[in-house]
Amino acid sequence: MKLMVIGSGGREHAVIRKLKESPSVETIYALPGNGGIAADAECVDIGAKDIEGAVRFAKENAIDFAVVTPDDPLVLGMVDALEAAGVPCFGPDKKAAVIEGSKVFSKNLMKKYGIPTASYEVFDDAEKALEYVKTAPLPTVVKADGLALGKGVLIAQTREEAIEAVKSIMEDKKFGASGDQIVVEEFLTGPEVSVLAFTDGVTVKPMVSSMDHKRAHDNDTGLNTGGMGTVAPNPYYTKDIADKCMETVFKPTIAAMAAEGRPFKGCLYFGLMLTPNGPKVIEYNCRFGDPETQVVLPLMESDLLEAMQACRNGTLDKTDVRFSDKHACCVIMASDGYPESYEKGYEITCDAGINAQVYVAGAKLEGDKLLTSGGRVLGVTAVAESLPKAIDAAYSDVEKVHFGSAFYRHDIGGRALKALEN
Ligand code: AMP
Ligand code: GLY
Image (tube, rainbow, N blue to C red; front, top):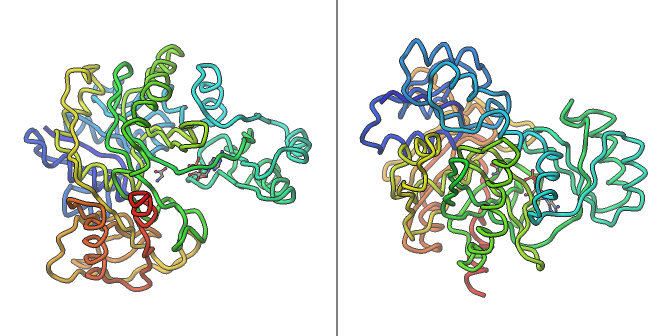
């Protein structure tokens, strides 16, 4: 089969590597891919949001199956356009992708169907929102309704910060039209867990759980990033909690989307917080997480393409979805300064003897040299029998990867290790 994968990050690199293991895969095109992905797929210079370009390419190249990975094209309706052109896709259509595209939609969905989440208020008027945050309990969480490159959540510790957050989103339009409406919600506490789940709109099969590390620097300090590293499974996510999430969150969410006439097919990402009052949904994403995917897919034992086709064809109940009981750790190597400004154009070199998987996110080829071109440059993922071994193996291979201005966190998996000790 000829496949095309939309996107250009480490997540897409991990998806492509896994898809290559499927016996029926002949060729994979990446639109647009990146300099590192070029080692595993044919990169095509069509942007991830270029719906017309993707449809044209798919038709011209007789693509058998398309995997639309990033949020933007999903929310814009790339799956609808490809399917209309006769190209079978993995990924939700526009109507279902709204579960990530609008926080107001997802919060109202959870309220209507009794899915546990933080209590909240919605505002489309800055004055009313400002009035509200003057008396709302602190800390207060202010969220832009629409997509904001993962930066649309502001946690205000003080009254002043809450007012500033509302003003920056609704008046200064820090995230453009994504801030026309906001959600102001209750601050929750507890360990966070990411669960990616395959679903065909009826059946839901969760993948192995994982733990992201969102802050830029060690000990969870510094700015929020797209994610600086992950481990899987997440030790806080016990069998009991998994069973509870299945009954109170996963199944009800899939049923709610179907009842709303928006059946969700693809990978649904549940961002959960294990609060003292039980697991609650922090956010839904309509796609694989990044860098969660870089630890989850290396642990997948069954065939990824088969699972993706089953999600699209409505046969997930009959499809084998299996994960190993090993552990994985992914350490993201970034350009110093990320998530703000950083330098790029440095050559990436690797010493011999790397055992880990290196998933490339922000790099371009110049001749035969791989040069840094993004904030998150690459992820180094090791799989081992235990979490400590996976962490050690990942860090030992990080030492073998070199580029100018590189930085990474030194404590990926540290919190997970502590949880295991308790
Ligand atoms: P999001 O972009 O929705 O993933 O939010 C980013 C991060 O903000 C989450 O991973 C949480 O750590 C934090 N967060 C979001 N909502 C809440 C909440 N209601 N209470 C506490 N922390 C939150
Ligand atoms: N790592 C968080 C996300 O993919 O949204």
